[in-house]
Image (tube, rainbow, N blue to C red):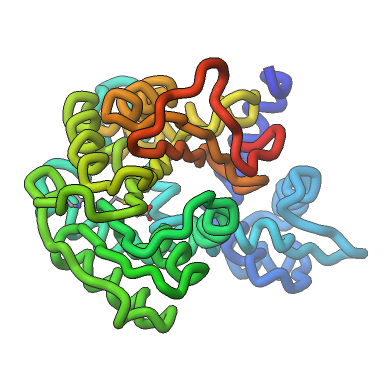
Length: 337
Ligand SMILES: C[S@@+](CC[C@H](N)C(=O)[O-])C[C@H]1O[C@@H](n2cnc3c(N)ncnc32)[C@H](O)[C@@H]1O
């Protein structure tokens, strides 16, 4: 148990009230505000506003100096990096009780490829910002120097493009749905790499990935959108596109091994269930087994420092026999989430 039940309810409801009332949003500018000023602006009771602000201070989301309160840098970052924004996330989490009763998600982003394309066209830019620092950690610790990279369900291409930024000889083939690939191209242009990128505009389950032609393939935050049989088949096909010695990198909600990681994974699993019908966070042992049966030996684990959330990665090399014993850990830091 990470905190007392009484505290848990108090924390959840205070944070929720602060978000819904607009307090959190106002504090995100990190400037000093007097409680009466915030209360006037948001039509709240001034004394009650102070009580809730004090809880936010204790949570590390706000600071207090004399009579003024402001949001911390952590709060501002949290709000800036929330994919789809604070309002959309409030609506999603606010659906939890209805979901509990009905089993119905608030929205089914995965009801068709068209719905998926529309949802991801607007979301992948936010995901790119959210994953930027983790992608840099990963690019620094990659044990391969790729020249040809395939990024399956690339979204903004943040993972492959960040790797390509480190290896100037590398070229990237980005696979996604057509409208989402516009975001990939814009990101490549913003990073000065448009000339080193190609579009592969096809449903990933139908796409023809050239056999034995890539030395790095990336599947980031995609397997969670697929049921087990389709996820395993996709890994097989992508593994076949690697040259012998080429590496497959799977990034997903794969963090494990600490209470913080387990909490992040279960919260992420619930978040996914609130917005999809078929989304599933596959256990990392399962993903590792699929990679091994796709001919990838020596599956190593990579975690992402103190990056918030449940992100983790597995890297397997084509044609290398699996090592006995526990998997090698690449660049991992203890207690990560
Ligand atoms: C959660 S996003 C991840 C994007 C990116 N890899 C990242 O980690 O930021 C999932 C991506 O998979 C793409 N996708 C989903 N189903 C697809 C399909 N059948 N074919 C191609 N792309 C697909 C979506 O359009 C979206 O860009």
